[in-house]
Length: 264
Ligand code: MG
Ligand code: MG
Image (cartoon, rainbow, N blue to C red):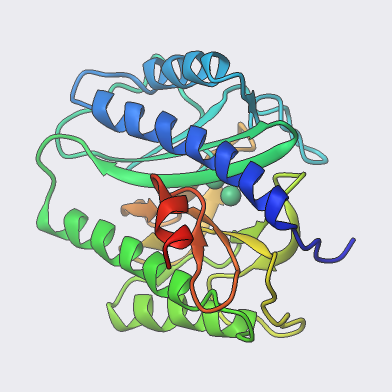
């Protein structure tokens, strides 16, 4: 369907949806502690989504050949890369890492963001994984200026992650976002061949590097959702929804990001 550019008024609406996403992730991050289940986190996210008058982007989301996703939240612990299903059986322990990924729409416009959080005390290696993944996302955001191309963004992620000796997951990536959660263009976390769109004002990209301590290879559980590292090692995931303006990217899913841009 091609890339849909958003007007300033539409970007404001996307900002509003993304601020709800940020509120939900902040609340979950405060709740995350040893003893909490991912089922608890799913229920809290659902309640906050309702209270905000937002509509979940994930609940009952069903790509072809997939059962509908059963929660408003993806909760992915340790070797789970993305799309973990919240469960009362999955109880967090000190030393775990958990990716929380939440998306919703407000007034017909979508927001999508994720972060990976430490549970209690984590290993130095796990901390390094979180830092590298977050830094990869920051480096990608820096590339979100008009005139750049997708390969500038993808290359920034791929180069940095590989320099750090970690594996960048290739089979999943980011996406355009707007009136749908998944729009054109795909936002690969490595330099893919083929289409390489130039960034223009009004493009909005959900950028989401997924980084593995070991090999980049992943497998999917029998539930058809849960994506795990093939080698069982840790994986982390950070995501922001970012609007292209001119020289200064607008990170819609960052707390109070409007003010920063309005005064820039
Ligand atoms: Mg997401
Ligand atoms: Mg996404």
